[in-house]
Every structure is written in structure tokens, then in C-alpha cells.
Length: 420
Image (cartoon, rainbow, N blue to C red; front, side):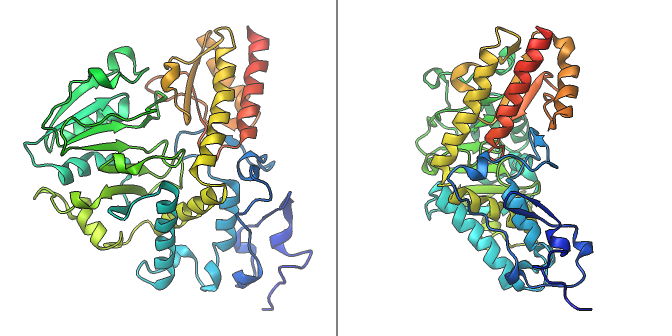
């Protein structure tokens, strides 16, 4: 069968366009393999804000889900253009051997770009793992302490509480502070914390996805030989972070940097090699570090997608620029809530409100179902709060464009005008 020209006006690859983007029809319509070198979609932008501010294409919704969450449209388009034949390799990333040179180049670039984004020093290992952040609730104590060792947990939401409960199986954890009695609306003053001087580590959840509480600064372990450990799943790569303040950072990718299936661990190398004897091989950080995250078949396509997102963040100017955009989006939404005269309410203390996850309730709770229904008609989805707390929650991760937040705020004001 003769190859169909990609430049022909009746080419199935060019039948649908939006601005400068090319939307590809399903691969099944492509009659034969074509060279990726002849057709590509660039992740670069012509203006500084284009990547995050441009409107969604008309056939896509604004997805406010907490995770899996929205991904940058240009990243999805690039992945689509490379799906059938990655860089002329004759195969998809999904089909590659994880030990082949093609995938090695993908995972090595993903790590290099992440190191550049977060300024990760060479004395830290970067691991691309599976099992989500929840698996790290067990892996952290198994790798960092002996069964009888003391560790501290500062609990500002459900995920920190779950991490503490899992750690009880493998060491001697203590909750040094919990916001549960206040329904998790604040972060305590670090000065009043009763830290254990012998604790091997102090664990925090840097951003609690469900309750919308985010650390703006970080506590320091009392033990000079102890380390700070952070679950950064829902604010990973949303702003610059001084990695050297932490012994270990872990994050599920499915909120800010990729699809579900990848968990990233950044761990100081001197902490490796001391795993408890009962540690399963798949939870031993040293094994993964020694094998460059290729001990077994990793989530290859998910890592590839993370790499595209890292590349995109660098092209936006790095995390300093990304943080500015996130501040702007969050400010617009929180201002709308605060200026609604009580029609909308956010329970979280203003000083620790999350830039990523914005929970809010309606003064008239009986209107919540209608709010969600009407929002969905306007192509704004996944605004329902977590089942454990109710209300609404707008997750406005890096990939949520400014236009999405502006549309939500306009809808909220219109809804209030109709029902106040």
C-alpha cells in the first residue's frame, strides 16, 4: 500500500485543527507506518505564558480532578504524535525493551531534566518506582530505621495519618501533632512541637490533597542525625524546593507531572543500604538506585510522559516561573471565595491554603448538587469534594490553564447571583 502524504490536504492526520495544534485521528486510521521525522508537534511556545494560559480546545473539558489529573495539552499532543513511531525507532514507547538504548535515553533525560528543575545534588538518588505514594508509607520506615527506632509524624490531613498508621508495622512512630480534632485546617507553629531527640526521621505531607493544607515552610528534626521526609505528591514541581532540607522526598506522579503508575523518590545516598531484613526486594531503595530504576520492568510509558512534562516545565522557565503562574491562579480563585460574602467558604487558614487543591463549601449545602450539574454543563468537571469531607474541591495543578480558573470563577459568580 502506498504511503499517504502527511502534507496532503485530505490526510487523516490533518483533518482537525485548533489554533496551531494538529489533532491526530486514532492510529487505526493511519494506513501505514510513516517517519516521525516528517511530522512533529513542538512543546515550545511562542510567548511565555502560552503553555499554561491558552484556552482548551473545544472538545476538551476543564478537568479539576485531584488525580489522575489534567495534563498539559501540548504534552498530550506531542505524545500522540510520537505514539506510533517514537523518533523513527519503528515502535512505540509502549513496545520498547526497558533495557534497550531507546528507553534508556528516555529515562536518563527524564532524570536529568528533573534534576535541573529541582536542582537535585549528585549526592541524592532519583528513583522512578511503582506502587504510588501509598507504597512509600511502608518503604520509608523499612529503609530508614530499625524495628524499634523512634520516628515522628506531623499529621495535617488524611494522607499523613495513613502514613503514620502504616509505619506502626515497622518501627515506633509517634504523632507529635495532629489537626484531626480541628478537621485539618492548619499547620502548627514549629516552635511548640514536642520533637523526639532520638527520632530517625520527621515525616510530613507537604500538601494535603483532600483538605487543601500546604506547608509554606518546613520543620527541622530535633535529632541532628535525623532527616525530614516529605510526601509531596500533590505539589511536586509546583514551586522551587530546597531538596537539601530533606533526607527523602516522594511523590505520586498523577497529580502534577504525569499519568498514574509512577512514583518518584528522591533520597540522599548515604541513607541507602540499611533496609530492614524483612524489606521486600521491590521496596529496597538501594536495589533500585544500584540498577538506575531498571531492576525490573518499570512503568515505561508513564516515565516517558513524566519526561515530556519535565521538558515542558523547563521550557516555561523552570519552577520559579511555574510558581508565579500557580500563585496567580490560586489568588483569583481564593479571592472569589473570600469576596462572596459567605456564599462560598474555604475553611483552611489563609496562611497555609494550598496552591494546588482548593476546597470550598456553599452556604446553602442543598445547592451543591445543582452547582456540580451546572458546572458540568459548562464543561468543568470533577469539582466534587472528596467523599470523606464533601463540599467542592478545585484542583488547579500546573497544567490547569488560567482560562480554566477564570471560567470557574465567572461561573461561581453567576451561580451566586442566581441563588443568593
